[in-house]
Length: 325
Ligand SMILES: Nc1ncnc2c1ncn2[C@@H]1O[C@H](COP(=O)(O)OP(=O)(O)OP(=O)(O)O)[C@@H](O)[C@H]1O
Image (cartoon, rainbow, N blue to C red; front, side, top):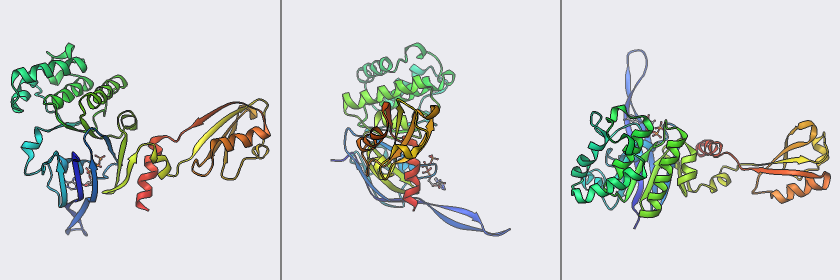
């Protein structure tokens, strides 16, 4: 049974906009427009999209913070808004911008409170806390008040707090925003291990494509309130019609692109290093790298070669645009 089921889910907001100098009128903003998706237990899914695409609105409906305007949503078997308390025992939520820790208390004092809130006995929460503190390296700042922690330290504390009650599903909204590379990597490693070892389902929104590459086998791209893509990360390139680039270093210089007799569909991009280095782009759906290389090799001796996949951020931007066309 899916852990998240979303069916024809919509949410609109009524906002006031100005209509002339003294008049204001009501306008509906359609933040989410009839989306459908399911997530199976143990999956790690990236929920990505441009600013204002509808990610936070969806997450708020999944966690019971916002009532949908229409459609159906079931998370861990619950209807999130009316069954919010029961749902809170099954899910963990991390919002990069919001804290669930007590700011004036030393970090370690938040966990007994959270344990009590989840109705866990000391024999239950304490070993779990030790395990999380160990995995997230919380040791050296456990006695520091939360307000004095660095962002990276606090986020590690937040993730430990969200996972204390061993939730089946963890929803993370921008978990790595503002973190340095080392803290990001630590967090990603931890989340990946949590999913592999305990089967915890992950759903995360992020603007950092490395989070997705590192953690998620599947991405949902939301654009203007609709799902523009649902599939593996590798499939994004195909859908976006992205090009691949081959860079060749020749044994002897060639100063004209025409001399390389490139096949139809391959586009010569640049000549560098006095005619030695040439870049050629092509659509991998229409032309194989082997065909491009064979054509170049028949015209000149190739000393070295590298292939460059399209940048994932570039692909996602292309996809946002294509959903609107
Ligand atoms: N409470 C609200 N009242 C009115 N409009 C809202 C409200 N919340 C969201 N919106 C609008 O709904 C749309 C979707 O917003 P949402 O916050 O879901 O986007 P997002 O994808 O999370 O963006 P970001 O990446 O910037 O966080 C936007 O046009 C936003 O202005």
